[in-house]
Length: 342
Ligand SMILES: Cc1ncc(COP(=O)(O)O)c(C=O)c1O
Image (cartoon, rainbow, N blue to C red; front, side):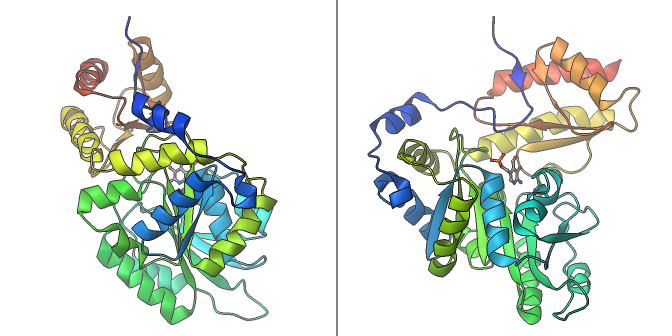
């Protein structure tokens, strides 16, 4: 009996046999002493991919984002981001709780960031208002349906950040998907941001791990922040080996996930349930015009062996990933179209 077709997230993948073999064979040491050769190699490789000086392995994407935010935004000053950004939606208030950071948001626009709107929000230094210290951009945008922020928009944001003397952070959990979808080199993204956090466990399929990327000085400070947050790991090379494998073997194949997401979207479009265009591996659903809500869809699909992510009363999401093949997409289309036809 095959398992369910799991479209909840690209984090549900399991390490492949060759990835596990590299994990098992990884040379390790104590990374809190900086002595894990596999972690050190991963950090050097990721820094080079983005054209930055240094990088730091972190257990999760949330911790990687929060380390970067603490580097860029001192307590009592503010971070600007989209109201739907992961850093303010799904990180349980960490910027405020750990960094004393005030977050202010622009209305949720997913990947369609308006640089002039962001520029108008920046508050200068002074003793009265909360000074803006950094802007965070999510690439691709998770709640924005996997949308890709265009390179031109990012360049405009860089110019605006430079003019205002504030930093630019990229929550690049799925920056690989943007790179594959738009063909933008990772170094072109890297040169626009002061810091990036990139995930090895979403889409790329490592079991855990994210990387903070920045200057040597920033990463030296990041090491302290990571330790303070409880993220100093010991023989983490076992995990870093999975990440190194994923970087070598699992970036280009993301194109297949994008094609499968587009197939799902094409099949569901006639039912008027797509929340927006599908650019990468996320199919956002808006059920406001349906006879049922998102939790009902979740239950009906689960009962037929398809798992979907319910994000709100009327919002759901389907995500493609490497544990999903064409047969799984066919099955999901059959089940979902049958439900939407009711
Ligand atoms: C855009 C984005 N940033 C950050 C994260 C956080 O990653 P983690 O779950 O590893 O903390 C996620 C997780 O899904 C995400 O989608």
